[in-house]
Image (cartoon, rainbow, N blue to C red):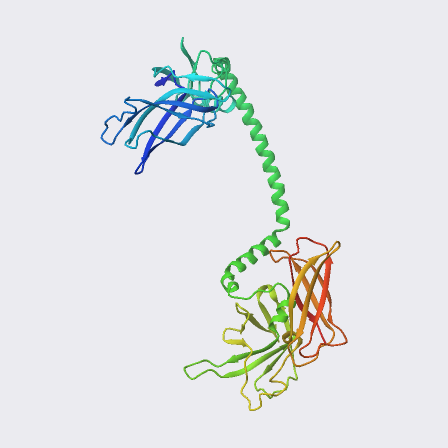
Length: 452
């Protein structure tokens, strides 16, 4: 083992005392930190202090060159560091202080008095590099802080972890081992036993590692069964990431019903504006799940293209052509060039033709006064449907999506908001839907499912 010198204050109960003085216009404060040497939980501490100004001159307190700093109502655990303890100093001129412990109060009621600095240089035996196998074995099976050989004298003993302990202490205040345990562990027999125990422990760890390796191999084989799914998921994620910018520019809908309802009516494509003004070139008229392309307001809507809705991606197809709904839902794009805007007029001398003033239940019927309430058995949504169009609509079937505060659909219901009696232009009618009682439901959205 290699001889090393270590200076220890054998009277100390704390160590590594640090101070910093901060000041403002009318006061000065000290920020104090220290390390508890492990004799108990410190609840109060008294320091002897001397104060100085910026020039190093002593600042007298009540005519004396020293004063007391008392800190109470703290809790500093054994072998822990107390940091950032702030105390007000008795003179605003103070810029530096020197402190040393005076008395310490512990959680068990004991009070220790500091008998003054008593620094002693001890010559310790430290494990050398050549002895690392023994040291590592002791650290593995006895204590991770093993560093020195046990040193004993008439004043006390220094543990293998480097902590000085008085003769009145049988157990180390740092690692908690008794002097006898340390002596036994560092004996030749103890060292040999530690080496043998480490071999057995390493063998056990190797076996556990082999078992984990086998378990991992089994898990890997199971994973290979689903490799196709995993690859598909990865590809989907890559596609999702690559399209994130595009998706951020799209209007996303929570359901087909909502998207269908929002897209009903006329959508107009205009010529480019080169300073000459824009001209409406043609339109798509969307009615339910059909779309009609019109190049003149007098055209007859004799053939409808089937629409396939993809609300989660903000797209739909008309006769195989994909349309992307732009953010805000007021326009959609066909391919890379043709943009269609909500509403608009085609050039015509007769702007009162039936085709020109196209409407459907999706565009004419509006829902209002939606309210959600609960009784002893059901959660209920009530509302009003109003016909803002020029036609009478019958057998209007609606769907209600009951949602929580985050917008997640928890339940659904459908009913006829309008029956065989019909809803004439300008008329309003109330409706009601209900689901099993659920306190998480806070809102309900309504969309048209079908009508006549």
